[in-house]
Length: 334
Ligand code: NAD
Ligand code: UDP
Image 1 (cartoon, protein in one colour):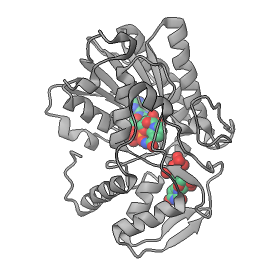
Image 2: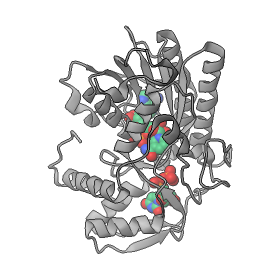
Image 3: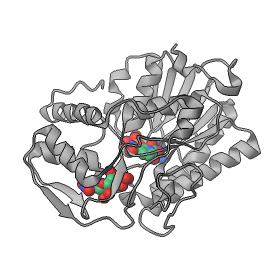
């Protein structure tokens, strides 16, 4: 087993993970986590109801006897026989387009789903990691965002179904730690991109790539001056497992501090795809955050984690994957 998955921190003598539950494991980030765990020799139980994910993301693992797929809605209790060392809770719609069309299911995934996953961790005496989000900072008034910032969230705006569900999930995770002694951690993931994003999921990276490859206008919202900090998925999942392997409760920011405007991102995708497609300015979504950049000092100090993939290189890899998908020549493995 990889030493990167050995537990450290104050519990350095504890055994490495043997069997891990990944809720939302058929999604974009979750499926990469399943791969990294399986590649490290760990058994994985992937729990997913295909709300926004697909079996295609894990189909290359179906013959691996260390991999188990449980088709299940995590808003119901999660019955898993046998030992479990770690529960990674990712099940939730994540793209704005998804959570805006699934508002109640998003709130339920963050509330009922988080309780189910926490109960599972409590029953199994497992470590628990919540995949939270930079969206808990809302439209941040502090920049860059540190974990100590409480955020600026509109509780009744359209994005609140996601933001408040994750804020509730953080509170529930904290309560299980204090009341029930569950070994919990919270990671706040900033914008992540890479292979296996759905071409139609509405997020900026897949939209721009799909549009550029099709020769269609790249739809930039507002004047494109709002910023995001884009992290390659390989770095994000490495960070999640680094936090899981430690004993720190978090919250811990995971993201790439390389900040870019959305217009710059669109032009970079045009350049890397060699597309002559124009940029088209369209309406900005309500409450779309103005800027976002993680302060990752805590992740570095506690876990020695920082992103290693240059966003430009990560984008090229992602473009290659989308191109292969569109040509029907994709190997689903990566
Ligand atoms: P995704 O939509 O690709 O994956 C989510 C997965 O959860 C899907 O496979 C979906 O079917 C599953 N799911 C949703 N509700 C479920 C339920 N009730 N029961 C069982 N399964 C359910 O999204 P993603 O981008 O991979 O995000 C994964 C997690 O990471 C989410 O919790 C998200 O909030 C968090 N996150 C992602 C990003 C990012 O940039 N991708 C940023 C911040 C946080
Ligand atoms: N965006 C855009 N064009 C698109 C999709 C998104 O300009 O086709 C913008 C969006 O308004 C936001 C930024 O890109 O300002 C990032 O959006 P995304 O949905 O990827 O992530 P999030 O809003 O969750 O940060």
